[in-house]
Image 1 (cartoon, rainbow, N blue to C red):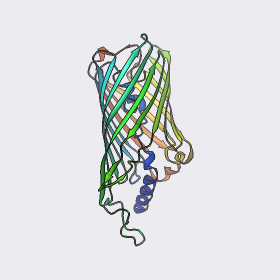
Image 2 (image 1 turned 90 degrees about the horizontal axis):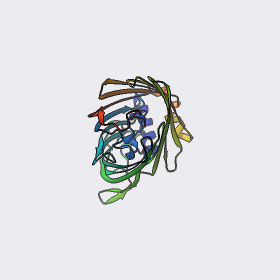
Image 3 (image 1 turned 180 degrees about the vertical axis):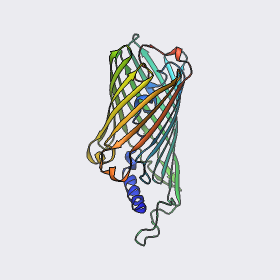
Image 4 (image 1 turned 90 degrees about the vertical axis):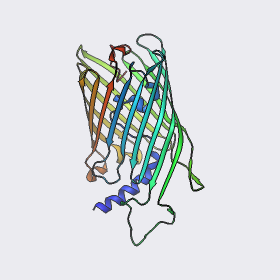
Length: 318
């Protein structure tokens, strides 16, 4: 059974590797700078953050995703600078990137702000054809198309984004990869598989009372030539210290059998400047029979909370 799952996961992952542009986060609301460079510096103080996602637990070769971010305002309150480190694994493939991020904010008044962002860096690709999960099948001992034990290369990537913050609403659009260079293997150049991806997010905050808030928001991703994936999230905030949420992820076309799920999210302020969050995705697709859902962990630390812009607004959402 284990070997059959290995075959299935390898075939599945190879078939949609080109579509897996940027790792998926159920807790996108806690890591906006990881999906939109225009959010860099909007917390108003230096921050570090880390996220870990294990997708399709128990499924051999399933995607894994890790991120580390550092960002904050520089040269006054109109400029943000950040660093985004990412690592993604899918079957026999590994993707590791380091990108510098910059954002410039145009402030119209205390409640309205428009931010423009840019990111650029290098991504490393590696494919290990000697992975133990690849084994002899039906008497075939090797694939003539895979003459090397591995393929390794680097690609230069550029992305951009725009973010609008109002008193009780936000809107953002980003393109994590608007440009990428191909890399070659022993004189044979081939495409990295990067396609143009468009991400968008929006949210609205409802005040229940002075200690409770309800935020409804959406995060969508579209890769050229593939259907749209959409997360719809409800998040309840109590005293700005405890947060509980429920998300529904939907998709169209063949991706509906890969990503449809319910996500349960909880966040806790461990101390004044530290925040920890955890989420679990319960799969609703046909893959439910061969895996146990997805787990995600995240943490953020803010160095100087007193410098937050417009402290009346929860900065993780607005």
